[in-house]
Image 1 (cartoon, helix red, strand yellow):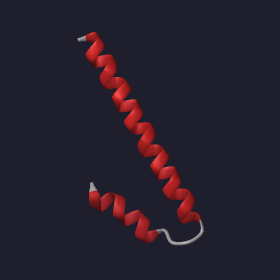
Image 2 (cartoon, rainbow, N blue to C red):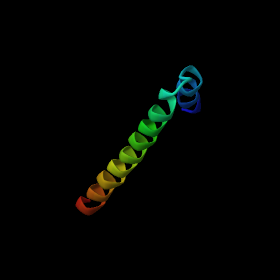
Image 3 (spheres, helix red, strand yellow):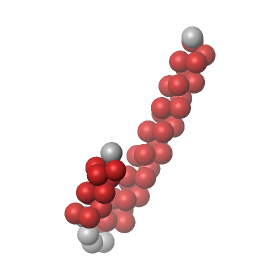
Image 4 (spheres, rainbow, N blue to C red):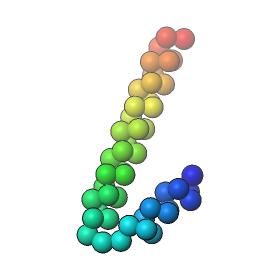
Length: 46
């Protein structure tokens, strides 16, 4: 998993890299929130 996150950062160099990094961070946060939400639903059900 560490190799996957490091590769694009090295490949993308330029003014757009800041925006892409921000997009990646937002995606990661939303994925974590979605995962915790699903976990909460699963705990409530079972």
